[in-house]
Length: 153
Image (cartoon, rainbow, N blue to C red; front, side, top):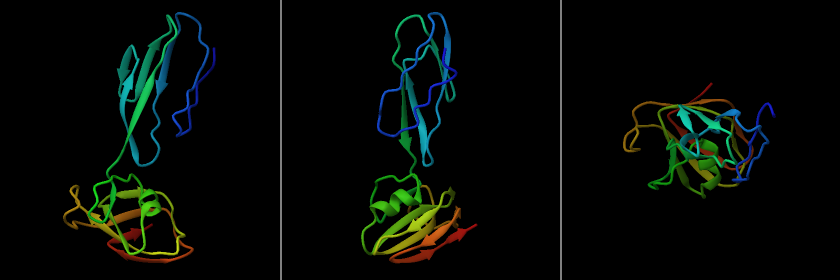
């Protein structure tokens, strides 16, 4: 019996393991930064982030994740879980709006564009209520970044 199954990829690839009939297997979700567990399917029992499966036949289990609504581009409604993913989609003169939360990541500015990072937004992205905190490095390699209401520590 394997000690664990690691499905650490983002390509919806299948992960498999061999278990003895009658074994109870506990799967634990580990969302990437900027996402959260949305649902489990195929479990006999679910407890928070854990899916418990009785191996009495071949089983298929699915963990579904959602991207958190931590940042947006301009007036858009597309959700970004991290500053980096928002920056990756930003175009020249784009504005990244970030919530009044702590982002734990490194943000590398490396595209030859001008981007504004405006932080401290409320949950509806309508008002600046505080400051966005970046717990990590802000590295400027290329382009121009204008910031408002951003603390880096």
